[in-house]
Image (cartoon, rainbow, N blue to C red; front, side):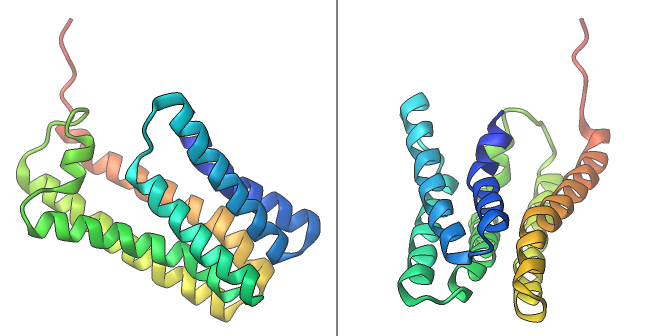
Length: 178
């Protein structure tokens, strides 16, 4: 359910773009959708995860610049900036000795410290490459291709990466005995 809630603004962006073929309308819809997502999260849980705040800040800042300056490049940079912020946060947390992934997932998964580190670095590299790939698609292909890549390409690549991570981690999962 949380996964679908996280996709809400992206789905709205995608649907409004394909209905109107207007990046500026789709950007405005994405801003409104992200605001609604954060408001709903706050209303339900009385707190909002930091990454939702970051995403909201980026979509309002870069989406607002897109609309105000009538320049689509700002919204096209949003996924890259978000990926690189996440990569940087994981990198810095690891370098200062506070593994970010372990802080987030440590309750659900018990792993040796070297494995947490490998997992963190894999995500850092993945997010770094995803940011670069987004820019490659944004600058080398048509707007329609970029919108499809944003919706389906990034989702597909994320799914493949998560499955690969799960296969890597499977040997560390210990089932509880009943």
